[in-house]
Amino acid sequence: MKKLILILIIGLIYSCKPRIKNNPETLEKVFAMSDFDIEIQNWGCFGGSEEHFNVTVKNNGFLLKSKRTGKSHLVSKIKMDSLKNYLKTKIGKENYGGCTSSEYIRIGSLFNSVDYQHSYCSGIEATMINDLLNYYELISKNEKEN
Image (cartoon, rainbow, N blue to C red; front, side, top):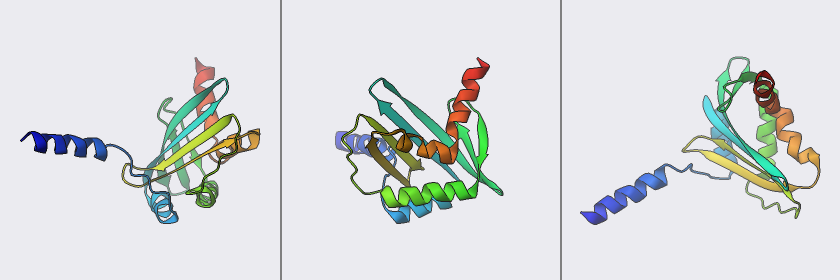
């Protein structure tokens, strides 16, 4: 009986973690979903940030909603396709730049996710994802209102 309970607990813990498969097929499945999540982490010498967003497919684009602030805006299909193409060229590759700042991106659902992490030295890599999703606007709006 104890073994069965232990197996059930291990199974429950294992099932609660996202299934990350860094391959183009999983990436295509993620972007074909009507609802998925994006987690973005940026870390540097003097701190970092972690943001979580829910993405819902709409007729004229993708609705990006911040889980922290509740603010949302529409992201065009062209920009989401650019994000998909960017990640398609990066996922599954080791990218150690030896720099002091790093970015982590996980995109998908509990059962289909891809992730990408890299370190960078210039601000170009740090703002590329924001330029596509414009998520800084969702965060800064909340800070300006308070």
